[in-house]
Length: 563
Image 1: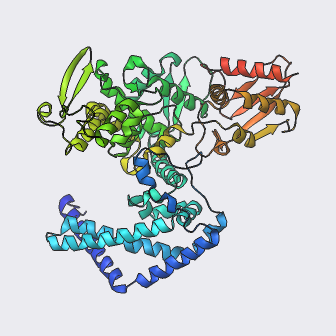
Image 2 (image 1 turned 90 degrees about the vertical axis):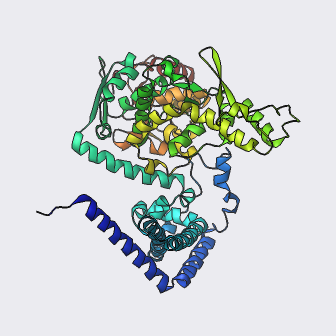
Image 3 (image 1 turned 180 degrees about the vertical axis):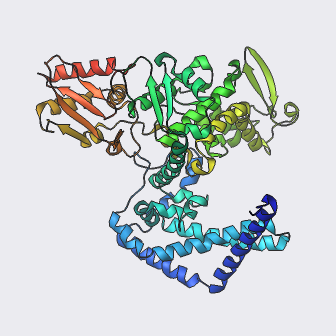
């Protein structure tokens, strides 16, 4: 037997790796590959011109800055940018060896610099390595930025490249903004699928028996003692005293109910923003003595839903999404939480304090909770430190930090402890705050035209009078009625990120389907959520069809008898 001797060999191994990286980096420098990179860039530019994408992104250079400022990206419904025909990927494949070589060479300088920081005692050596790394990163980022449309087309055609030659696209933070959302999402799904498959082989399915009227409490008590590995297994839900068999529909309904209950005021976990549309942790949640345990549970549930591809009707504030990504919120994020307060902060930054009567401000803020007020210092003895023209930016930053971070830091930590058990920080950090919101909640609007274009028929034709009436009724529904219908037939009121063409059922991707049902003119339509199917009887008029549809979606909520 051979004693592996932990510490010694680890250091030796690290030294060998560092030495190998140094030698590789030195070799690349001596080869003088600059002329090859110039030729590669020219070739890709020629391809861009041929495909009509050259210089198309000039207007998007400040995209990430705009995101931080609270602006919205100009994306389509699924968060996707312009895509190229699949034939382009075939053309690009000819340049793949050179593209991979470019990534390997320039990314290796970063690795070399990191090893130098860890192992070299000489500051000059470390500084030199960092300079080389900066050059490598700058060259890499500039290359990715100039060719992002082509690179995204290549990654769509061959997603495994993000685990191989082009992995720096996902690993180097400066490269991530140039990746399209659907490419990021595919990479993310691949990573979490591996973790889920590994957990399923070891622990099997995650089976929960839930009382419909106590979903939140039952799930909390049954999951609190489960390990993260156990929770990664395939979810299997049984509602007690009901006949439903979970082939996906019951799990979707389980998450739908939890998404509502986590914001239940009786738990005092979250508080809504001024517009009532988004939520962030309640600074006074300690009213519930088990609040931190509940926050960890909610974090696990959101992480489980994200990892398994379930969408939640849960909309958090932009600052809270940033916390989930490990990104520090800015004062611009306050606008969505409290618009009036944000306007006051902007006035502080844009005008002279004396002119707006705020020359008496100090580095403190007041907290009003449980019927009493108290002064909180933003800096040591802040109530005695005046806000001036010179330090007012710091004041605005600190008061926003208090509102969005400091006052709820225990709640955030507990939530993230649970969330990161399900989704590792290094995986989720590939997304922006807006992309994470899409990943959690899906598309906000239900496009009936898209649903109609992705519907299959059994014993019906698209031109049959019943089907014509059906779609006329669907187009006339209110937004909430459309959401209720979608929940009635699929078990969830959320739209898949890719649109209805990627609606999921028990057999994977399973489009919405309408089946001709037997029965009298007064028969009700019925749904099979595991198959995204609607059984539609033949009605004598559009008015009767509309009446039966509205009755079905109204009465079909809140119970589940047959899958």
